Length: 415
Image 1 (cartoon, one colour):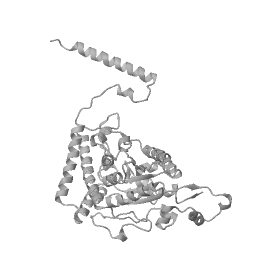
Image 2 (cartoon, helix red, strand yellow):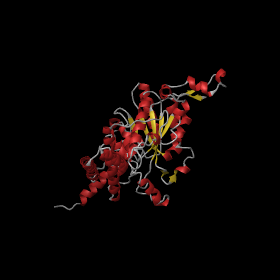
Image 3 (cartoon, one colour):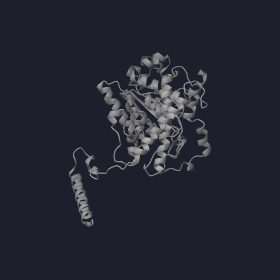
Image 4 (cartoon, one colour):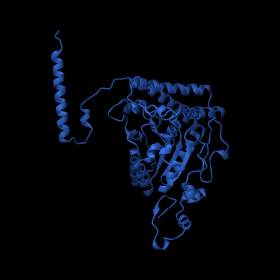
């Protein structure tokens, strides 16, 4: 079997079984490969170095140090796009810190912070069109909000409610997924349905480095490649799967190199450089929409805080390691870049800060309200048509609640 540049598997006939790979590649060259003027292998394999356009100091890297090579060149996003991205970065950081405080106050049950990963979150949301779909993980709340979901609705899941808080169809955002990697299969299913309907839809499926060790990861990528689906698999490699470091997950040259095994293109990018992220993900969306098939993008980033409020990160990593990544903070990097270019001044900074504080206040107010609880909700949304067992259980609960209410009424003193 050979893997063609348009990401489809081809079984060789008897006469071609022993043909050289170069002849098969030439016959199978796709429009994307012809456009870039490179080989199939160079198209599929990620660039030799991660794409980084703006360095940790906020300065624009010289062209020779951006990691680009033939077929892997990226232009600068527009100024308006960069300013909008920085605004979402600031809001996202404030949301992360506010939610962590709400957990400590007992107003949220748990929160997996993406402090330090906000650039990945924002770029994932901004690279998509209104009709595209995004499937997030449990750590992607900032991406969900950047996609237009109300902040309080986005946090409903983490306050311990029984539902996800928002309508996935309205926002084209899957419910944040707590089981590891199952969202990739959902994403592939939506992409397959869209292709069968002839819809112009791209699906972005988010996951972490630990997810690449799951069977669902293999199944999703293999199905997407075989059926040539417009899916971007966006791996946020934050170096740890809870407490398990990347070295215990994979010894591949990079997670992006896994793409070639499925017959799709892979790329890796500095996940704390939002300029590079917007460029790489933006082109990935265009390629997927134009029919180039699925792609895998690996972003190198870091989870600066604990896995969740229930985790003690000091047990498996050193403070010195965290300090190294603090120096690569995506917010300070982007602020320095925009300020140096004259795109961000004190007034702009104050306006963005005020917006972030308004979102934080909205979260404090919304998550401080008591939510009415209907015990019968335990049974209403399990099946479209309740089973006899559920009906029986609901009736037993209703009877118990009625007897408790009657007993409480009888015990009240008369006036």
